[in-house]
Length: 399
Image (cartoon, rainbow, N blue to C red; front, side):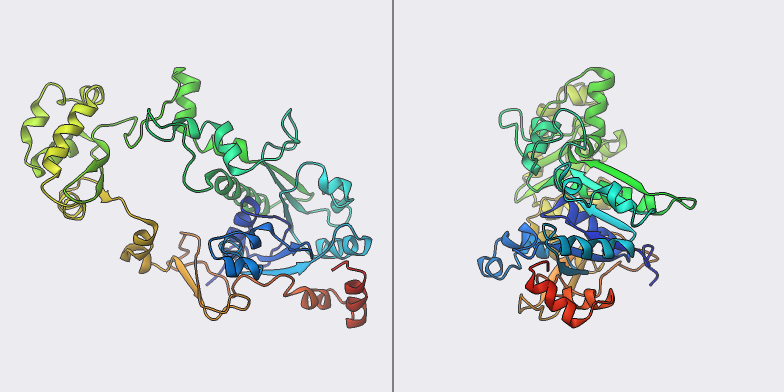
């Protein structure tokens, strides 16, 4: 297949999640991604994950999750010779992505302005918690900190349990997606002559993703509140107890509500004054829930899912992650890639791809996540360095 970013080289200097996730997307869309890691352990994510044996090997699951298709070179930026190697790489690259605190790259002498002298058309993407300026710019930031400061936690959970963090690193992930979009947009400029500096804030990116909640506050001056599994805009819309399992129902339209009532054997509900029209249902959502759950107790979530979707009432079961991965809609559409007998892991590896199809095909990468520095020698040889010179750099601990 044809990959949209084929021909572009990306230097991935990032750690843990937001930056690696960004470059994970770029790699799957065809970019050549070179992961530049410190020789003393590399990406911190190599030490994270639920499998202790892989952590010991420096191939933690958190690292494996978003580093397939990236070559790995180790460079010590604190060594002058290491910085020179990096500058040589930059000269033949199109993009640099980093997620250090503001000012770190400048202090090392390899910041944006320094690198523009080497590559005047460079796209430089800096991902930070709060952005490159402002009163909080220098603070360290992790996903949970951003979830709290963005307002995400304040609207997650039920009124009696909030604030709750979202169950996966949503702020890191949204920041990474935002960065990937920004990089792709910068590369798409047909008449770009100079460099492009992308300042991606995880805080701002996360707040942008909360569009409806933000607009309710900005426009209506209504503070968003936690509503558990209820939908703020419609009722009945949320997660309902059944005879077995939890069922999501989104009967957002009047005709869907009436069909739902008929299907569960409670047609009298849609002529009840408490539930007859949309705003009445919102006002009396908990009474409506109670009535519907009495009827839903007659069957399992899976049974109701089939019955309701047959009559165009959107519904679906609430799955565990293992169940979500096993469902045919995912397993048959190629979202999960497989790599056989992966070096450093010594087993087959299954990893999620992008969730996008291009002309009916899944963007994929050719090789699994690499052991630390696995491609250092090959990349340096491609840059024209002799084996003797490479050994000198190794002795000097620059690589």
